[in-house]
Amino acid sequence: MENKLITPRKIQGFWELMPSEEALFEDMLTRLRKVFENNCFQPLDTPVAEFSEILLAKSGGDVDKEIYRFTKGHADICLRYDLTVPLARFVAGNMNELDFPFKRYQIGKVYRGERPQKGRFREFYQCDADVIGENLSLTYDAECIKLYEPCFKELKLDVMVEISNRKLLAGYFESLGGNVVELMTIVDKLDKLPKEEIVALFKDKGLKDKDIENTMKLVATKGDIFAIKTLSSICENETFKKGMQELETVDSYLKALGMQNYLYNLSIVRGHDYYTGTVFECYIKGKRNLGAIGGGGRYDNLCKNFMETKMEGVGMSIGITRLFDILRNENLLNTENYASVELGIITFNETLMAGLTLMSKFRDEGVKADIINETKSFKAKMKEANKRNLPYIIILGEDEVKAGIYTLKDMRTGEQEKLKFDEILEKLK
Image 1 (cartoon, rainbow, N blue to C red):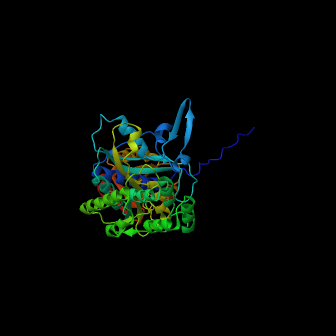
Image 2 (cartoon, rainbow, N blue to C red; image 1 turned 60 degrees about the vertical axis):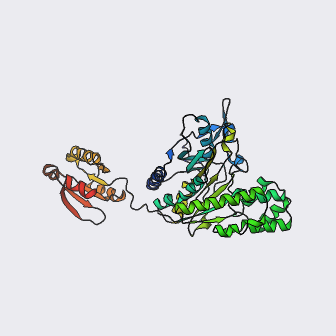
Image 3 (cartoon, helix red, strand yellow; image 1 turned 90 degrees about the vertical axis):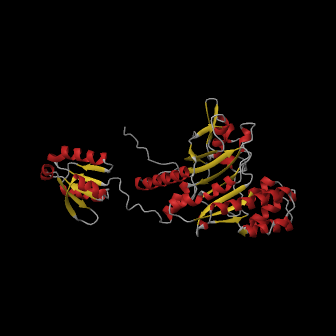
């Protein structure tokens, strides 16, 4: 009876790249880590799986439906859907060992059981930077927003950050007597649904025509801080007034930090209910239609589920998987110059041992060198070097081994030189 072969299928919506793309992705992560650490954020890693009571403590909205949840023995477990709730759990469990304000960054995979589509994955990486502390100054809100500029400068991308404060809409909806959480959820769908459907949803929640008109005017407001301040008289609610004051304060800090690429957009609310104040989203400049590639905000009450001491937080996040997918689809990635091997050494039967020694010497000096020593013809070995996109090769014959002078061929230009080891090393470096 023949063994039935298993089809090598991958679960839809889970992340996997070709090696040349993975190298570029890892380079992006390295660059982001450098920026975070240059801005005084410490590295942290937390488990991919958490107890369900931890991750479900204060998610709400549509998030609960997307969480991967399972049991193992008596344990009720969820896969993390973001990096912020595990951060709150970590802070609560290590209060006595941490210095506050605690600034940390984390890059790791998260999981959401939503329908896979363009730009949406079930498994993806997030890059987060957060600040946690008591009576946390709004300067940290500005610092997290400003962090987008050096991050994307390092990635050679121009971005625009759109900012709001949830207290503005929350206060306005409070003044109308509406269910704030439900109405904010509708606002978060503005970019996803036609205006007519948004209006219908507001009507279903009991808003009058005039209130809907004012709401649509409010969420359509964009511009600098002066454009936002013109709305100060639209609502006398104290929550609304506090949101306006916080936004003005953050703006003054952004100016002090030298932030350039930002505007205010009152339709920004973010999908998670734990955000309580400043909220923001980041877009590639001139390509807003591609969707947000990052976002974050202030969450003053998140840690209260894990400890009595009130710890406030603010953080920014980059959806690095989504970003990479956008760059790939827009043909903005350059994988042609990638080579896992910088120097190929073509050997023959009689020079294999010398080739291994030479390869080791180059590797010790930081050169990515590899042997091409398969039992093939010389022509086949050259074809292999071309297929592997090797920028340089050494053709190692017996005469080269005896003389210690090697034929180095530039595979891009076809030029050949006879050089000593140190001369080749200097050229490659």
